[in-house]
Length: 304
Image (cartoon, rainbow, N blue to C red; front, side, top):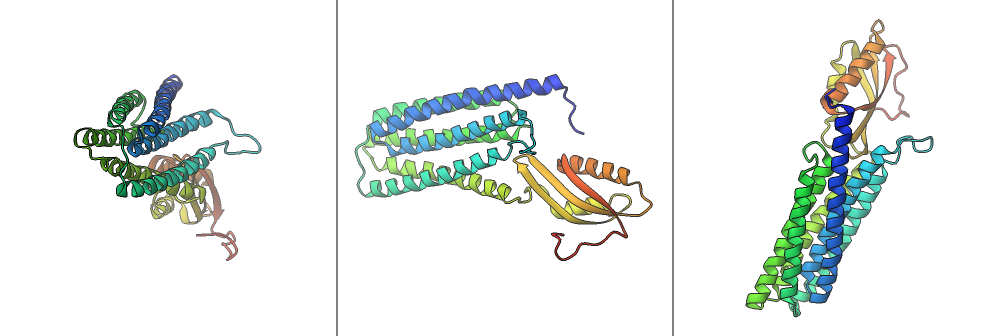
């Protein structure tokens, strides 16, 4: 079904991904504390906003680690899907926090535009320069993992690349203040970085709410799923079709298939499940097979 790696290969990749995420997480988290303190000491809003963006990186890396860890945890009688949804709740909290941080930075920058304060440009440059090196190192470590196949790792990698821009913005602002005395460069850089924070926060919040609302995974076309199910031999119609995500990268489906009375129902079920996995990556499907004479959906049923 598209997976040809042995168990040893899978566990090796899993271990490599976890180690890459763990090292990057500690690097980013340690530096964001340094950058936040440095931003307060040097009076640089650009550094504080870059620290906020690094917080989004640390949260993304932490969530990716959590997702890998949760994947190892077995389901139980009270949590039949395990604790996979916890990743989405944490992502929602992360997204809302980022939105609030970006609004605060905009508010601070607004006041600084009218009265640009003195900024310790040399200290700001030093911290921003170290931040750039930390991000380059974290990005390099993440490329050692499976950034092509693993969505969690890829999103964490993109977060770190985005933060590189924040460090570059703080460095440019520091240079403008050092050589030209343009203190207004600090709030301008902070606004540019907080736009990145706002975009990241909005995207994470929107995707989290979509999953919590049992929304259809964006990469799966409902009508295409319907037509492929109906095209299976012996299937006459599909109803009560629902597609949702348990967590990111874990789509699930349930539906009723109406089949000809003389058809082999076990064969239809096997073909339907194989097709859903091959074409749509849906490994978790619950399918009810019905004969043509079975009672049709009533208005009180949630059918579609």
